[in-house]
Length: 206
Image (cartoon, rainbow, N blue to C red; front, side):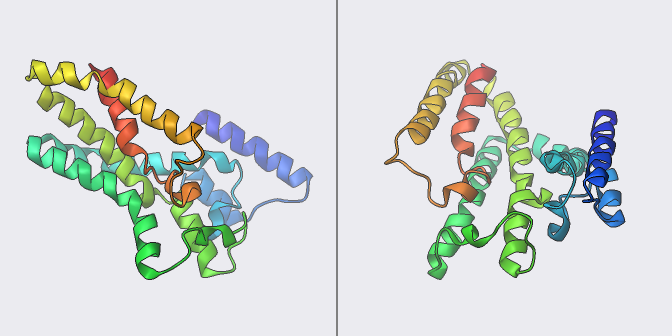
């Protein structure tokens, strides 16, 4: 936090020198690492790239509750919950398709604009801590899964092969134009690639 505070003060001084000082409310939100919560302020914050710190405070606050839940899960519960978490980001694709909407509806939003409901929704999906909670939970579930698999030596050896497979999948997605994620700009941000990333993490966990 000290480095964040120094960066915030420096950004404020620069903004004031250029006549673009943010509102007092926004400064209070940033001081308390809450800038990612209200979508009407998030893209107007100083040091916008620090938005995820706002998420981490929320996740750390929930850690003990989530830990108690996850640590009591058996293998079927852990695997099933992890699969459900993997599916969550795909709702940004499934819902527009089922509703007959344009998959790239979010392209109508321009950075810093909050006049329309679609602007607020896009900012919410891009920055709000609630939207990325599944990524934090996925990490905890992967840790629990690795612990549960630790007693199965044959499975552990097989899991070590997940890392190159995960990297191969990511490489194909990023290097072959014909293989493209639907609603890529938003879906990739919301971690539809989480299964491949999970394979890499599990593989390196050994």
